Length: 256
Image 1 (cartoon, rainbow, N blue to C red):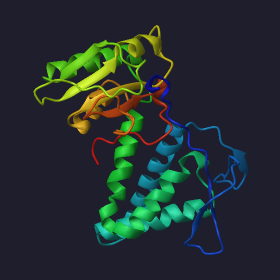
Image 2 (cartoon, rainbow, N blue to C red):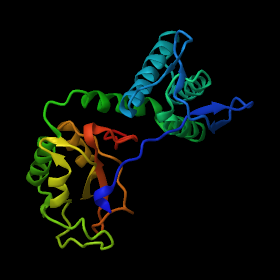
Image 3 (cartoon, rainbow, N blue to C red):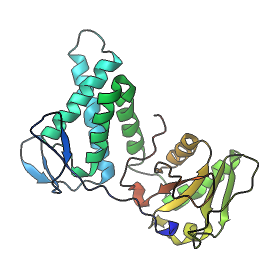
Image 4 (cartoon, helix red, strand yellow):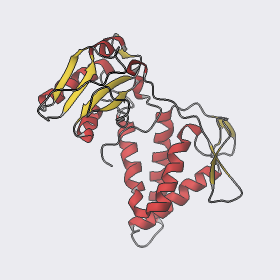
């Protein structure tokens, strides 16, 4: 059922084989090597871990650039960050919960070079995750304000219909092609306890997802990447808003 959708926490860690260029998935411990060389159990959330990676990458790139006489090209920056990510895995600097993300970035950088846009990626991650660290309003108020603002933006917003108890039925929204957002009335009520979101809230969107994600971010909300397969509304994608913004995966980035 859509009502039970939960974003899974990624539980992996990468280790190096005898080939320095090969990455494998193994070892489910939380052990990572700290800068002082002491093993320490990681208790970071996904959000804390992914922000730590982004901020460390920004610092490493800036420090490396300061040592260069000439300005680096985009390809050189991508090569540096790819090599840096690989080295961080060799010393197990980051916890396992972000392993899939970093291995994907390494693969992307090796195949696309500057096209991977790693500097811009880390800037976007740092910006969004810092912005939601200390939200000014509750998630309940944030969702209500998001719906109202999108309606003001001439989106077709439906939040007064209950349909989550029909998971095998894909509904069709009659409209004139304008951007639209649908959220189940029952889930909108049941997934909150007072102002606190207690279960991931599915929101179905057809329209500019970056506009939707930016509006959500302005309210202190992170949204998951869209998923067309899980959508209960035809021509819409499912986006999740999670309790305390803990999606357990990289959020939809608005500037990449």
